Image (cartoon, rainbow, N blue to C red; front, top):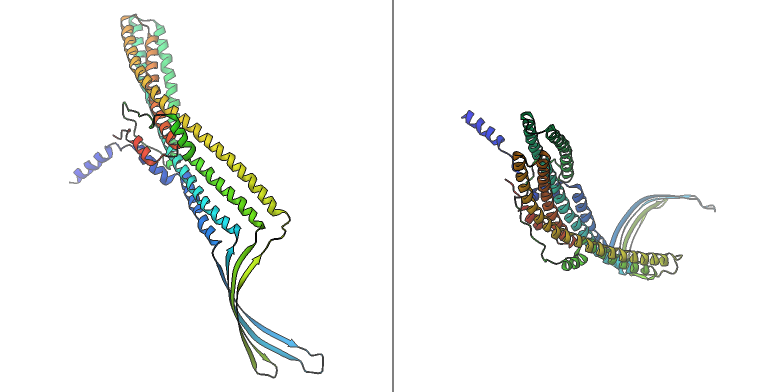
Length: 442
């Protein structure tokens, strides 16, 4: 029984671990990425602007109390004898202030709502950026793995061609030139393999920076992955959507609203304020005077009324604040226009990236078939003596370069599709899940 358990444990550890897919990697990034965590904390902090804005419109209530010991010595200028007075005084008070009209505070409350919306938009943009960053880093690792695998396969093919060239030279059917050419290509591929291994480690480190751990195995794309065109299959709807819904545009729109309210808030420095004020106080004191009995007094006061404040002159500071706020509003308006143009440009680039990528994938798939046929023909021609060794080596290099370019084109096309959704402000986890279904986790 013990041997059976040990055998099952060894068998379990010998099984290959399932590869992490794109969706799993994204969820790890969402839990561990410091940029995303920072944005989430900033959003939570931004949400507090609304209760702070409400607070300036609500009443403020304060309470205070005191107790003090009194010792008073009295010297009369006349012939009267001196006297002393000792006692204790206690008291407490409550005060209430309710703003009835304060335009500055009202504008501050209005700004608070837009600040919350701005904080939400900033966080949503970071969330979208996380999807794109994870996909970019994920596909960069896959592309680097593919490059390394293709170089290693090419190195193996060249080594076989080198061995064949050496055999042919020994039997006198080929010249030493074929051997030297094959050896040179083999040495070059060995150098490229070292560079590809280093690049793979760099790409894995970039992904590690996002997800918090070094990736082991990533699920690759399924063979002959079918790619879908963008929907709608026209550029202008995407551009229009980007100009209206892109999160950078939304952030600047809320910034413009805040800047507009800031002008009104600055102008309110000229406006009067009206508050309802009320207070309640109670004082109690007791004194003992030389030669007399203890004396005590109690007093209670209740006050309620209106308090009006009218600003008359502030040294020109209010007018300066208004001019500053107007200039900031114009700056924000121009920033909004910049954000719209940038969003439109990003949508155009991503749309063209998807369509051109799909066309490139189709062309490279056909080129792959042609390159394989060319390699087979050159190998056969070399065996019968109508092709030389360099022809076979060139055909091999062309085949592996085509495989590498095809894989890279597929990754770039999928990434362009995600960037297109991000530019239009509609990228969600569901879009990442759709891409994830194209991966093979076996």
